[in-house]
Every structure is written in C-alpha cells, then in structure tokens.
Amino acid sequence: MASGANKPVMLVGVDDSEHSVYALKWTLDNFFVPFSSNHPYKLIIVHARPTVTMAVGFAGPGVAEALPYVEADLKRQVTKVLDKMKEICSKKSVQDVVVEVHEGDGRNVLCDAVDKHHASILVVGSHGYGTIKRAVLGSVSDYCAHHAHCSVMIVKKPKTKQ
Image 1 (tube, rainbow, N blue to C red):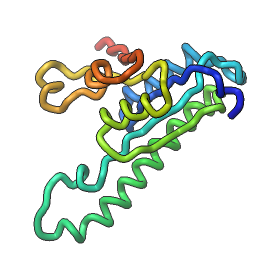
Image 2 (image 1 turned 90 degrees about the vertical axis):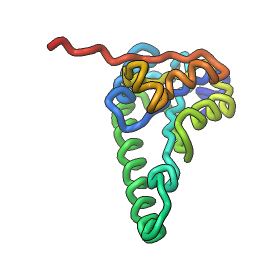
Image 3 (image 1 turned 180 degrees about the vertical axis):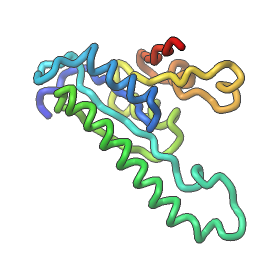
C-alpha cells in the first residue's frame, strides 16, 4: 500500500445501518476518483463489533449456553457488514481500502482508531435521533465530534419527502 504511505488518513465508521451506507457512499462520491490510486486520502473503514456480553446484556441461568450462538451470530453480522462495504467500494471503483474490525463500543473504537492511525478526518453517519433518543441511546457521532482528536464529518442522509 505504498500509494497511501504519505497521505492523510480518512477513517469512515460503519455499522449495519442505512445511514452508515449513505455516509460511505457520500464519502466515496465526494473524495475518491474511480479507477485512480491518486486519492487525496488513505481510506480506512472501521467497524465496531459488540462484545458477546454487550450483545447479551444480562446474566442469569442459561446465558452461558447461549454465548456460542451469540458469538456465531455476531461473526455473521460482521461478515455481512464488511461484505456490503467492500461491495460499495468495488462498485465505486475504489480499490485501495483498508477495512478493520475492532471489538467494543463504537464510540471508543472509532476514537481509538483515529489515534492509532493519526487520522485527519473521521466520517460517520447520523441516525438523526432527537434529543431524547440521543440521550437514552447515546450518539456515536456526537461522542466522536467531542472526543476524537481530528476533524469529524457527520453525514446526514437526506429525508425523503412524503
């Protein structure tokens, strides 16, 4: 990957949401020229895989027996997400992409990846939660905007008119 050795790093955080897919497509359309290795950024796609205990969320009788099934399901989900993101890059003719999966909470995974790669910019999608949902569920984009040590671009999917 010599072509990206001296380029600034652009990190794109992805999950299995349509907002994440939109953010990746938008990034590729606006920053990466198809069939070219002369992109302005080295592109790294990062996916945060929840831990088994995060996915289960509770403890009690019978949980230990369920853990292997949860683990297998999480692996299938990760494969599905990564295949989808690689397919999007391929369709946009962007080949020089690094894809990483790290286990943990998305907020921490993305901020750690920014530090690890010395990223210049982090791109994340926005689910468009209101104040209450954001307070209850948390917002990865909001957290990253406040804690990532780089510029953060929050890409919002346009609302469809009804």
